[in-house]
Amino acid sequence: MRRPLPIKTFSIESNPVKPNLNRLPKRPHAAESVFDGLASSYAIFNENPMVISFRTQVHQVISRFVPAESRILDLGCGPGSDFDFWASRQDRVVAIDASAKMIQLANSHNPKHADITVKHATLSLFKSERRFDAILMNFGVWNALGNSEEVHRQLKSLLAPEGIIIAVVMPPLHLAALFEDVLRLRLRHAKSRILERYSTTSSGWKFRYLSAPDFVQEWSILDQQSLGPLLPSPDQLGRIPLARSWLRLMEKVDRWFGAQSQLIGGDHIIFVLQAK
Ligand SMILES: C[S@@+](CC[C@H](N)C(=O)[O-])C[C@H]1O[C@@H](n2cnc3c(N)ncnc32)[C@H](O)[C@@H]1O
Image 1: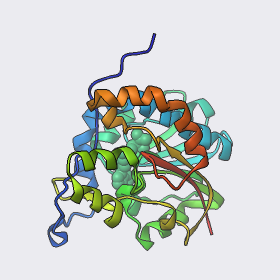
Image 2 (image 1 turned 180 degrees about the vertical axis):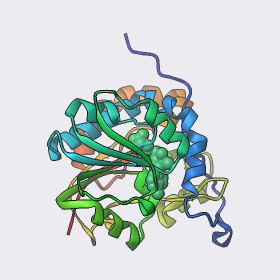
Image 3 (image 1 turned 180 degrees about the horizontal axis):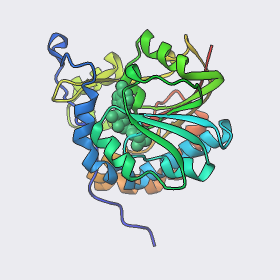
């Protein structure tokens, strides 16, 4: 018997109205308050069957590119969503997050037998004496960081020679999100995501949608895999009953498609990157 799908869901609330960029919050880490607000509902997101399936695919990619027992930076670790995976591989992990509430959850989720040091820090303030074999930014962390030269420089400074980044990013194009925007006549929202490549929350926090052209100047792309190019988003799955039937119909085709085609976007895209 199929497990019933949870009805509750999680998404970063976005505001289709074009923001006044001069009035965006001046705080350097406005992401902190946004993710503090999402921390208590994050468990619901992590229990969503699509998220479980996507996360498993991310772990498969990590296993292909990063040997077990590596030195890992889990950047934007959230509530410790990947801690059991690190523990199973016996990696030596430093896990940081900008949100104090996420860090509280991560600390309570840290498996006793694991080698995971949890720290409340943002990328810009984080310093490490030792460099990392791999940096994971799972489920949209890089969308929150933006794409400035400074971000690329900081990431490179934390990587060991030959070190790699596994970045799971939200791209500008996701067919199911576009379809819903068109049906609901949210054309400004669609334009902002696909053409201007950003969204803003109602609190004014801005996050960028990213794709291969954002990385190619600074990084070699070793691998790229779309998650759910033909599927609804985990959020749509929770809200729209028709999305569940579509998921059942398309799940297998989608997995094959995601491994072959990068042109059609997806709910998220996994990038494996190495500094040029
Ligand atoms: C969508 S959550 C992903 C959490 C986790 N990686 C996962 O797979 O479930 C993004 C996380 O990135 C964190 N974050 C955003 N900007 C950050 C920054 N500049 N430095 C560190 N963490 C940041 C947020 O606080 C949030 O917990």
